[in-house]
Image (cartoon, rainbow, N blue to C red; front, side, top):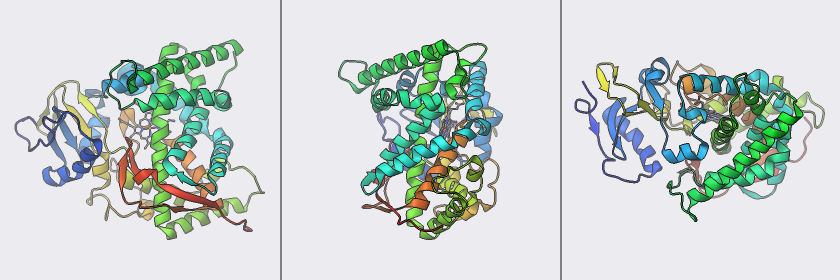
Length: 434
Ligand code: HEM
């Protein structure tokens, strides 16, 4: 049997040249209701198999991951760089993954707590008393933490130059790949070139100094079979891309859900105050403190589930693959739909409700995949959770915030975002004895 002629078909996107991602995302849940957990459709004329069952997602992402390669638009590949981790399978991917995981495993990031904390405190101070666009400001926070994880404490030396170039580069991520003077894509490619030059300079300074570093750049440079400068640059730009907007988007949803659920906010604040209680004024958080935040961590999990900011991912069958009697022909796209799994009433009761207590019991295997699953799952998930916990600690113990304007809508930029990036006013709480 083949999906192409035997399976139910939902061909709404046929003949549409351009498709707005939000329309696509909204329709995914509807498709699920109509066609079931595995069905075929067309996106921009390409045949795609949509997957909303935990078992089928595991088949594609874990058990038979070698038969499904990641696939991205050509423009993204050119912007991030062809040699970035996302685009590869096999030995080169495994080597990069080992180096990235080495820099982001708990043992490596535990020493970053005081530096992340001071980035969080600086950010919060700069937002005090003004109306801010939560998403935009969180992007600055997550950008600075990403640079810290890549360059260690040296990051402040390069922050402004890297920021200037990266901010131009990102504007072209979703542009048409037309490399003519004046186009967004052209400006982005120029900024990318400059970014590579800055990175080459940093690499050369480090080689001259000869000192070793525990950050991501140190991990890339320390590999016995050395990576080329170009491979390193592609992967550094790739990690900034993977780390920044994702975490900023989740942080924005956390602020929204906490503001809308005062009981949860109060309980989180109590949990965080209990950590402050044993500390002197101005004393830093420790790695151990960040492990004493069970409710905060359930709030993060529930936000990841409800918001499902990465609604789905793309794979392509590298050969004909059979799944449960169906044939997925070589070259067909396969999309595991994380959001549909996270919003299935068969898996999570009352799925639209924000209820962190549901995570008091661990979810069943392959039903909760905010960081993906298998070979390409997110190597930065521990860092993301750490920087979110530290921000929540300072936010709830020292500040209150209120949402400005309507907050019910969702935008895609490209990740799911609260409407208008969630404008808020942040105010310092009066000092209280703890
Ligand atoms: C809350 C924030 C984040 C979310 C929700 C998230 C989610 C994901 C997901 C779902 C994937 C797998 C995509 C796929 O299978 O196609 C992924 C991959 C990846 N993420 Fe994250 N991520 C987050 C933060 C981070 C951070 C902070 C970093 C780095 C510091 C990072 C680095 C990466 C990298 C390098 C990959 C590619 C891995 C590979 O291809 O082997 N992510 N992320």
